[in-house]
Structure formats: structure tokens, C-alpha cells
Amino acid sequence: MGLFVKKPLHTLLAEAEESEKGLKKTLTSWSLVALGIGAIIGAGLFSITGMAAANYAGPAIMISFIVAALGCAFAGLCYAEFASMIPVAGSAYTYSYATMGEFIAWIIGWDLVLEYAVGAATVASSWSGYLSKLFATFGVSLPQHLMMTPFDTAADGTHGFMNLPAVFIVVLMSLVLIKGTSESALVNTIIVVLKVAIVLTFIFVGFKYVRPENLQPLIPENQGEFGKFGWSGIIRAAAVVFFAYIGFDAVSTAAQETKNPKKAMPIGIMGSLLICTVLYIIFAYVMVGVAHYTEFGQGSSSDHLAPVATAIDHMGVADASGKIQPAYPWLNNTIIIAILLGYASVILVMLLGQSRVFYSMSSDGLLPKFFSVVHSKYRTPARSNLFFMLFVSLFAAFVPGRVVGEMTSIGTLFAFILVCIGVIILRKSNPDAPRAFKTPMVPLVPILGVIVCFGMMAFLPFDTWIRLIVWMLIGMDVYLFFGLKHSILNKGKHDSKSYRTVSNTGLVMAVILAIVACAHHYTTNVPDTGLFYFSVGFAVLHLILFLANRSAKTAPAAEN
Image (cartoon, rainbow, N blue to C red; front, side, top):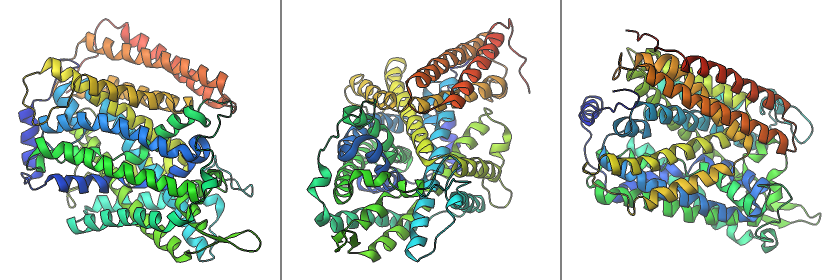
């Protein structure tokens, strides 16, 4: 018992049997490849690729996609082993609870909020940008101050107030989830075909408009700032566009429905990653080939998150005045409409995943029962959906797309690192556990996964690290003062040692937060006084809080 109590595998299987009504094993290798492609190709490619090229990598964004794919490949192999060991529909939270214990499961589960909830906010921000583009083609100009966050400024100097369209799509998708409307297999197939068709159409139409001068130099010279072009910019861009690969872990959650997971899992995960990586590289080549990478940093923030529209505007020939006349104006509207529909489904899936993670954590007693209350009519966790409708809406309305996109990437990279480490731990602690698929070359592959993923995390801006640590400290607070007391699997079993361990972990995080805040404050060229004082104050507050809790001789009494 204690912090590292594990959830028995037979319990998980029984829960799956009850909640999933015995999923049929119908998926083949190619079914998983199709599932992976549909899950991977989405918001990241169509939203932050242009921003990463404009700010960090230039035409070398193609290399950034390769680096990001390497991290995904190593982590994907580790996911495949987890999925074959625990063939239950679920996430990294479920895997870790069964293999590494409650405390690690909490950390991963809390981190997944960063991937799903904040990721949904990123997609919603980009959805708003494409909606503005669509209306503009019909001569309708939406109010700029209602299309941007308060931290954004349009090209004409207009200051943002809130991103209203982003709030609208989040609310709409949340209401769909509450009602329990699910996508049929046919609709899922249509969405997959739609996403791939968008990419292929963009590539085939734009290929002949690629201008070699836009690709020179391939790697722009570093501008004297770490991560601002050059090789450091390539790695930083890889960490940012990593968001475009989020979703391949959905393949691993389908292990329970796979006929031969030992063969199909690696093919499904690696096959979908390979196909998507090739498409991404060619897509990026066309994008920065038809329009100079600096073009993707022009205009308002909504333009920055709609790079496909910008690229299509450059697919044509210049008139007498030198202005490019788009050769396929109809293509822009068609693709934008398709992207808007595809984005809606991505937001739906992310909000669905978030509600399931919180539902599981609440069912295990680690979060209030509020999140696991099922609606009497719709049989959905309606309260959880409403909570995240508000939470994600606030992020989408008031936090810039760049910030939430990078937060999503760092949260996912952190989860992948924990999964890679988990495989190494399991090989030592449970060497004889049945595994339908084994990650090859352990511990080399997991270690490489940790190195590549952490390398990308290290190249993300300091302010992104600050936000991650602040979020994880909030998670430590919730676990320390609620989860430890209400854990169903471990109720009444936590002693003072458990509380000291959690407090010590929080102390380390608080110290790291203070160090990173100082490093950011003294190295950034952009004033960060508010963020600096908030971070230091937050760190000091938690140092006091965790030191006080650590010095307690006895643990707080467990509650019934």
C-alpha cells in the first residue's frame, strides 16, 4: 500500500467488461493505421506550422518534423508494450495506475489535462482564425477585437478583447458531448478521408507554385538569440510542431479491440507515424515554398494560426503591380470549410478524452465525485463536461494560441517521457508479466525516447516551462489535500511518510520554478515583470506550504 499502490489488472479488466460491454476484437493492422492517421492529422498541422516556421525554423521546418517524429517513434513503441500488457481501453493514466502506482498515475493524469484541455483551446483559437478568413472571402469583416485575446494586437493596431468564436466552438462541442451524441464509424471514416484529402489537395495544387528562392537559405542564420533560427531554432520548432503528432497514442488505446495486438500494435503505431511524417514533410515543403516563411508571421494573430489560407493566397502568378492573384480562389474556401469541420471533430475528441480522464480519476477517488456523476438521461459525465466547457473557454478566450499550443506540447512530451521510463521500470519490477508486444532494445529505445522528448522540452521557451511547473504544483496541492485522503484503492492507508514524499516532491518543483523564473527574467529580451513576480511568489508560497506539511509528525486523518 502507500503512494505506489497499484490497481490490480483483474479490476481493470472487470471494469472494462462492465463499461465497454465486452469490446469485440475486430481491428486489423491496417485498421489501426487508418485510425492513427485520422487521429494524428489534425489541428497541429493546419495551425502552428506556419508560426513555427516564421518564428523559429524558417524553411528548415521540414527538418523539425523529422526530429519530432523520432521522439514519437520511440514513445510509440513504449505505448505499444503498455497496450499489449493491459489491453484495456484507456490512457497513460490507466496504464500507470496498474504498473507504477497511484502517485505516478496522478502525475500523468494531471499532466494529461494539459494535453487535452489546453490542446482543445489551441485548436479553438485556430478555428477562430480560419473562420475569420472564411468570412473575409465573402466580404464580411468580423470585429477584430472579438477575434483576439487581450494579449494580441492586429496589424492595424487594434487590441484584442476576447476570442469569441473560439468560445463558441468549445461551448458547442461540449453541449454535443453532454447530450451523448457520438460519431458513427461512417462519420469517422469521412473525417479521416477529409483530412487526408485536404493535405493531398494542398500538396498537389501547390507543388507547381513552389518558388526555389523561398527555400533559401534552408536553415536561416541564427539571429543571436537561442531558438531564433539556426539549429537551435530547428529543435525549438520541433518541440512546437510536436503538437501536430498528438493523437497517435489513440492507437494504443484500441488494443482491447485488436485481433492480434502483438503484430498489429507496432504496425498501427509506426505505420501511421511514418505515413503522417512523410505527408508532413511534403506539406511543409510546399507551404514554405509557395510563400516565404516570413509571410506566416504577418498580419493579426488569427492570420498566424491559419497558415494554409496564407499559402493558398500565394498559389498564383503576380499581376502588373506585383501582387499575386490566387489561381484557385475556390480552393481556399473549400479547404477552409473542410478544416473548420475537421477542427470541430478534433475539439470534440480532445474534450471527450479530457472528460474520460477526469471521470476515471474521480471514480478512483483522486478527484471530487462531481467529475464522475453521470447524467440520468444522457448517461454522460455532464458536470465534468460543463466544468471543462468553462475552463477551456476561458483559455481559448484570453490566452494566445502560441502559449496554449506550447503548453500542450510540453505536457504531452512530459507524459511520453513518463511512459518511456515506465517501460524500463516494468522490465525490472515485472519481468515475467505477459506481454503481447515487447519494446525492442530495452533500455536503449526508452532511453532514446526520454532523451529526444526531453531535448525538445529543453528547447521550448522558459515561460512554457514556468507554466508547466505551476500547473504541476497545483496538481500537487490537489493530491496532497484531497487525493491522498479520498483514494478508494488506498483509503486510510497513507501515513506520514506518504505526505512527506508528496511534500518533498512539491518542494523540489517549487525550487525549480524559482530557478527557471530567474533564468527567464534575466535572459529574455521581452519584459516579463508580471510573470517573474508571480512565479517567484508562487514558488515561495509553496515552499512554505510544503515545508509546513513536511514537518508535521502525523498525517492528517483520512476521511470517509
